[in-house]
Length: 637
Image (cartoon, rainbow, N blue to C red; front, top):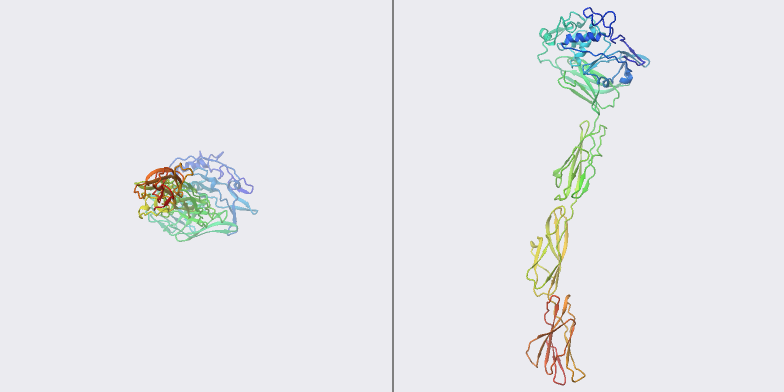
């Protein structure tokens, strides 16, 4: 019952469908004195007889404000000027009711523009049915039985053509659409077997199979379909045009379609789906679809910009396949995998698709990431690839440096996709060259002097190339293969002076980065001969004091000089004696006081380093000590 101030109700009886008419055949259902809303009990019994199963009807009366419950109606003027209104948002209400319910609306008109607009098309069916104004008499029983069949998905079977004649689609009298208030049609005829099937089950047909057995063909009007259960007849719905229009200030869905099958049909269910949240917000039906005739279907909607999908025959019960029509303009989303990044070995890297968006506000529904292995220097284990922010761990020793390339695919709610790529540059940590500790070699040294660079390392990869080069010292000779090895060896020259070599080791990792380290080799060899040896005969002032020879020489340049050794040869003139060690001093002077007159004294000196290496002899010097008179001094080479 409508409680809106602008609404009028047609049915005001106890059952809100009219008082149950007394029938002597069913006196317990419709008592004459005080008839309750027993029309539903009457229907319950008749349903039991018609469909052959037990029914228990539960009756509820609800007084409601229609505008508050269903929203304000859509109203317009028909072509003949009749004002019409329709409450098009009933789906949320009826979806809460049990399946196979029958909703009986009592509202007749609604105040609009100060006129009483007829409430149009308050009927529909899905898992339940909605009907208008039918009284609960025998004719009403046909209506309720017919509508109840719709709750099971049964389509219409019979239709009135323009001349008022009936057209048959299939054998099922109760689902005929020709009873709709046209006097004189066959379903108004009590003698019609199809009407008796509905109204007189005790004398007619108790089930559908019995009806088919006896009525395997039928002629109604001037159309013949026989038999209809052989699989040769079919419906083929083809949409010719679909659009959203605005008519008299009301947005409407307009669909032009044609039945290109070989049998007419009707009651084709239609669902209206909000594409953004995938919810069904309304249901309707297309009443009659003859063969090869263009039929135009209209349905009012709230606004023309809604993202809408219309599904015709969603269960594919009539057309054998559903038809989906999308009413929106959808462009692909924009995928953004973010800016390229830089990372080091051992880092955890998180990718981001949060800058992706959809132009049409449908939203990003799916994310998918993958690594483009053919464009990456190595493969990583990418985690949570179906989220906006996947991540991966770079190995501590990845074995290579360079770009890792990842592809992002985003898909909007309508199935359109877009892709983008992002690169992660994995930087190479340079290798660490290690040429070893400086070497100090003391001659004589007969073994090879070896430089060991095998302790060079790379924190994130491997050393792939070694290269030695000399930077200091007397030139050493190596082969091209020797300088490519981590260990480089050479022999020290014997009896050589002090030497210093500088050698640099260059190493390259598998990321093509280089590093170098230099090592020094110090060879403690033999000092150079001392030069500048001079002598002076010291004659004492006192005759009794001995003669002395004073020797001096230039300082030796040996870095680790320990001192000097003095060698002397003693003999008379033209004596061939040899030099013998006399003494070792630390300074560049020496006084020889052990002299004999008439003898010749020759001297040589050597330099000695801390390792005991002794240089060659200096040039010799000869001093003759006379028996008396002039002293002769001669430098001998």
